[in-house]
Length: 245
Image 1 (cartoon, rainbow, N blue to C red):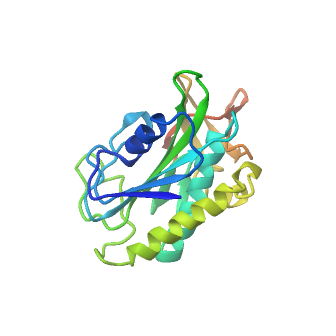
Image 2 (tube, rainbow, N blue to C red):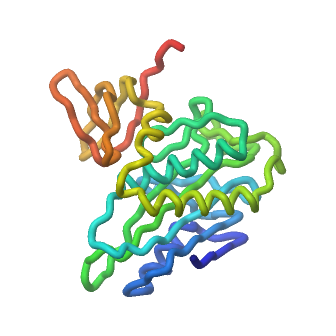
């Protein structure tokens, strides 16, 4: 594994993609870690607030030795692997909002983004970048997200971040070795914040409302509407109806 560290960068995902696109093929996984991102982003190119000294901003560049990979399983696996180590180092209980948000006390504490790298000549996928951003001890958030974002801790030096990052990386690669088997999906479902809830989902240029009955072993959302049962492999939950208790 090759490790790249930055005091400041636009985005660890962007840098991982730049490195990956410069090579026709690569066999060695690479990890990119920054102390501060000036252009961090999530799904749909939304900004991800990444102030210095207070967050985990990390991306994994993984070669694909095969022509097919499952982005749904990669994202769900990363969520489980991340939650395991976060809960080990911090006194918190995390949940996962399908498909890529880590939730603490009904607020977003972290996000995950998987992006494919394609060879421009062959149009084959040569690698995948999986980015993770976590608010470790961010004290202040911009006005537009302060009602929906939260940090793991209000103590600036609450944890030994070297040990935390090291175990985070180790646990990610441990799960990566077997992620195609979906052996982690039981944990994912146990941590789901949406199974059994009424939700509104945007996908394929439409919005549907229904109850989440399950998340299958491919990482797809199973949504029951009044008319049908849908299997949604890519999209975004934009609203979860509150429930008593």
